[in-house]
Amino acid sequence: MTSSNPLPVALITGASRGIGRAIADELAPTHHLLLGGRDRTALDALAASYPSAKPFAVDVREVTETDVAGIDRLDVLVHSAGVLQMGAVADLDDETWRTSFDINVFAVAKLTRLLLPALREARGQVIAINSGSGYSSGAGSAVYSGTKFALRALTDALREEERPNGVRVSSIHPGRVATDMQAELHDFEGKEYSPGAWIQPAQVAKAVRLAVDASRDSAVESLNIRPSGMA
Image (tube, rainbow, N blue to C red; front, side, top):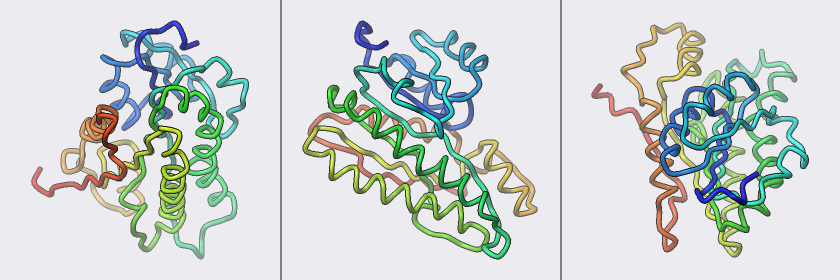
């Protein structure tokens, strides 16, 4: 799938919208993109809009060795797919916890494990889109913050494990970003949503670009981005 392409290869999960789409837009001029998501039709249309891209139409919870068999070189793996589920601990049922951890943590671990041989071959990078919720939690955010704390633990460990193999690992922690997920969060909070008040997805994509373009003598290991309150 990738060996004959002269461009570096980047696989982006959650590439069809929000932060993932912005990252795809940012990397498209310099990379061959593998666009991760579940909607093959939407991914086909998106791939056609870029200079070099193919759909990677897989439910991240169900990815298998067969799905990644053709990826023999991978320069960048961006984990952007995720779900936001909120609620008080007293009200959260088992399925909510399972779904959140399945998508936000377990799927990340599995896809990374399956692609590590290709990443090691390319001396590539793993970039996880985490959250400010990966550092602190509050009322109603136990399940979401729990997944993001776990994702931070995963990337911290992976970074040290893969350092001898030449694979760099970055954890990007944006605050509130103007996406569909942010609209859902405002609805949960019962607040009016004004997209212009929050971080724009393109700014998160620029942080990813910073990590991708870092020379081999350096690594963007963790980066926090917060709304300025000035918009």
